[in-house]
Length: 224
Image 1 (cartoon, one colour):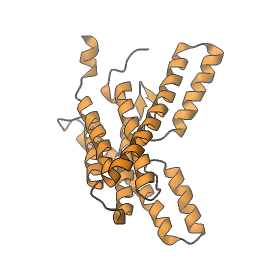
Image 2 (spheres, rainbow, N blue to C red):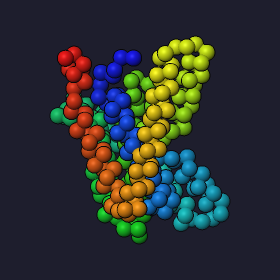
Image 3 (cartoon, rainbow, N blue to C red):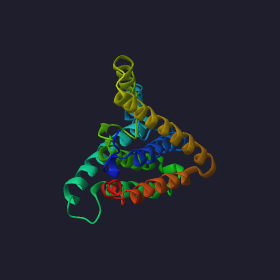
Image 4 (cartoon, rainbow, N blue to C red):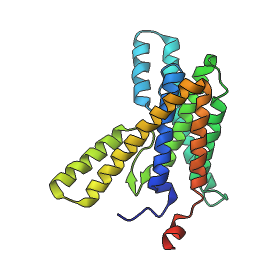
């Protein structure tokens, strides 16, 4: 399998982003009132349940992160449209840098500001899910797992019947990203126990590392 010629679609960057994705979900759920940063389906489910129970305050706890996630997606597209060919940085670099800065702000929010903290964390996740949608040309999410689970299983089934090595590679790639997401959640929970609200700074540092990684010109590196 030929290696990706763009760092933004490389396995290396995908691993780092999946670690960050799992970390953010663990942080928001374990440290910020049981709200998901990435899994907006879960937030929508809990929103619906609380609306049915007329728990208006609890409903807002889940509504605002969903809205912030959508705003993050829109912001990523705004960056893509306005920064392309007009900046020293690639638009995806600006997106991941914005993520890191947003999460750095979240660490200063006390428990009394969990609604704002979760909203900003979800906004960062929305930026990531829109900015990084492919690894090796395959549609892979680094902030959620259900699509990866479906695609990975499908490719393993294809390999079982066709013995196509490319399908086996894709299956391993999808499941590998899921594993990195889980490891990110494990790391996130461990740091929450150690650092509480400040734990998200570790995730911001991981995303800043992704920003630095994207300075590597993969095409030149592959030609050498």
